[in-house]
Picture 1 (tube, protein in one colour):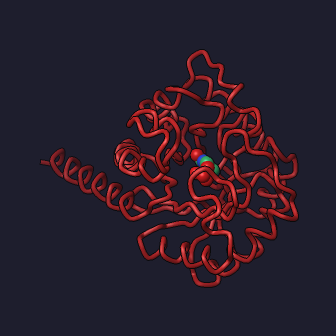
Picture 2 (cartoon, protein in one colour; picture 1 turned 180 degrees about the horizontal axis):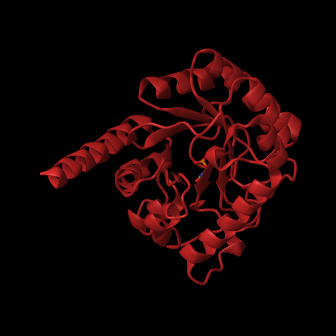
Length: 279
Ligand code: PMM
């Protein structure tokens, strides 16, 4: 199972079945509500629905493996059997294994394999698509790990080390998506160079996922840190358009419809530019 592809940037809808995620925590805690929201995101144009059962908001503690499985499995099962392309947002190999068995087509690991040494061998064994995100430590301490020289060069080097580990474990390059991990060990304005220099990340030859949706750096930019996270949706859509124009493989967003529109705008823009070059 290689990485899903399309002729435009894909849109991954966020479905957190947690009581405490920073944006949608507590909203989709009951299975029926979560499945209904996942189905609505697909109807709004989501190419993938990313189901997560453990919050990674700054300062969050861990949940037990059993609790994570209890949260995600019924939702993954229901959405996958309804025909949705489901990804599972987990750092745990046991959760990934259960979710893939229930029909998930992609494992989204914010730790890139660092949190669980059994993750890479499992992904190699399953042959499933795998997002490896740039990560330096768990949510309870990640804000203290924001020390970089040239952040783009450092993130690329650390992702390259993850790629080496994946290859050593037997994961094929065709399974792999990389992600700069916006907001993870990145505070203040440190996400901006990673977005502005997306071309450098893409130059390493892997598809790149951009997860900017509603994050703190956008709240700071638009001076809406204290309001509801959905106040950052317009800024998120702008990032979706620019990330798509830069060639991102996918954007991971809470509000799907407007990001689908944004990536379509970028696609039409690019197509017209390519046409112009042929004249
Ligand atoms: N961000 C969050 C969770 N999972 N996965 C990937 N691959 N990239 C991200 O940027 C990312 C992620 C942050 O929490 P949220 O689920 O509330 O958006």
